[in-house]
Length: 202
Image 1: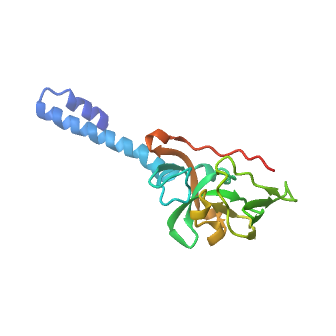
Image 2: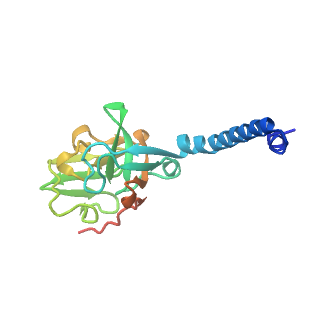
Image 3: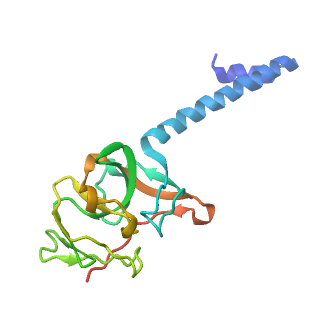
């Protein structure tokens, strides 16, 4: 006889004590079933993440509650423009949130506030148009040229003047990337899915 049949018989009993016991047995069933569903989702598919610091303003603010999709990158690679959470290369116990700018195998140059990307599709280089998520007054400081390896990503915070990112600690290895930001859960008035920007090049 299953635990479900047992709890049903207890709840149908005429004895008040037996009914109380049946109620608690049913509650245990619900908790066990809930954990069986929630725990795999929580630890293998999605993770909560709280934003700390100002590096992603004005698109993400401190203490905002985000849900991280951990399954997509098991089936495909990160794409330019996606917001990712990763382990800090110099201290893997810490987690950072940044935007993917440079992809594996690309050459990336930062000069005069502009980001130029060279790859197989654009061997002569293209200037990355970030107007979809950056205001005109955001300036990407630093003069840098970097060749990304086969499993390396160049990441930047949206608030470039307040972000410690790949300009400081270098590229992020693929194995350090935990997942991408799927949705914002808090605050309520900003709740919603996070979409990837569509780039136009000039």
